[in-house]
Length: 363
Length: 239
Image 1 (cartoon, rainbow over the protein chains, first blue to last red):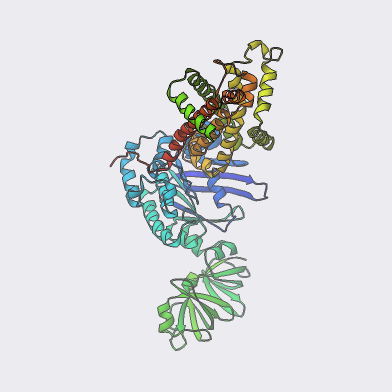
Image 2 (cartoon, helix red, strand yellow):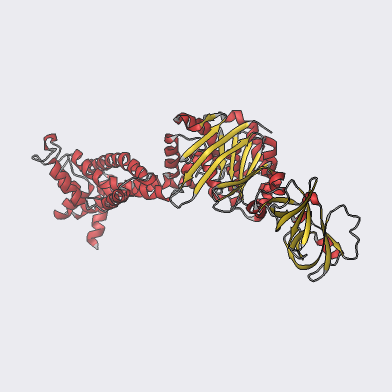
């Protein structure tokens, strides 16, 4: 974990539309990729603008390296000069690609010659070598956003703010830029704050995840904790938990809980207490499917269910299977397994989930 | 028809044989309109930027005033300047009536709203997020203004061209405040009117041809700067 670079305390900003951003505390550490995820209108971009001091909060503090950025007028500009931002739109100026890339250096009075190595690295990595003399208007959307990324990255900022930089790019360019960008981010190791509403993007790139909704932080923390142990139903649904079931803890033995749900009992490793009303969260990739001919008795999974496949849908590299086990259980399975096991809607199957893969949170 | 051909022939003789009166008129026209456009740029471009980039109380009214000013009839500008500079007027003590300075003032009054209005429209066309991007890159207020001015440079050139076109072709105001005094305040447009009145059609045609050539030449220079900007960028960089 890197040092604390940026903190926010009691941040409030209210808009005429009624939308309010309200964040009691958040911290962004160095050498980490912090991903802000949440639905449209949840306040992610607003938070980025506030962190970049392009909008002033009504209340609260933005603390950069231990000092409040609004303590004086010059400190705002000084703090901003330690940051760089890339927005959804490339926002390039009507000057050459080269001049756009070095614009921030000129404005910050940094000698271009001192950044020769970074320049060469970025131009090569972002495939801009043959575009430097071009006017941005003559570039494709992907090339424009590559230029905007180079313009921000050449500044080697302490805080890199990326507000859905790949949102307006066609799918093919997006995949390509995404892999180049992620590679660069891992190499430069800065405090990066990356906004996206694509949870797969967050899964790939994040060290830390902050889930936002209606101007508030619903949950923040290490990626695996947020994705595997969502704090509430909103986060669970947003991070892709397909099976969410209401239940009551009926038994507690050591750390193993038995939860009664809709006619079935589910086992989970949790510190919940008997009588607690809980929500059971099962990630689809944690569900294992067996055909009825296969013996599942030797499996270590405590949760075993019999059910009937109700639907199979294509979701890209996986197929999503919905099984009626008395409750709806979702599983991800490869195309290969579908063929091998001749799975289809209406077929009886068995499903198993390890107790340690089942997460509980208070209903 | 013969009259026109004769007029054109005489016009070229006047232009290319070094007619002193014609040269004097051309020079004064360029000096008066040139100074007026420069002053109008100094006033109009910042007004256009200030009104375009900032939100303030009365912005809509200010923009309406600028737009009305763009359509200000030159005789109205002439009348206004005449009242100000008339011997018994508020600025009469300056003794500027019927001088080239009075003509410059009248032309400034005509060109400033044109330049301000076209600049304002150009600035409002800029993506407002460019300002935030400039700030985000570390620009201070002055640098932001400079970046946005550079961004709007092509339409700003169009504003200058419109302002120049507005004043060099104008006759009513300069006639009213300059008086069309031979060898002192006579410019191409007022001289043309005078020549037509006196039946000197050759002279009138010569003056109009010169006026057209001048207007074309100035606009050609500005247009070439404007179009040059759109060409390939040939900046040197290391490698």
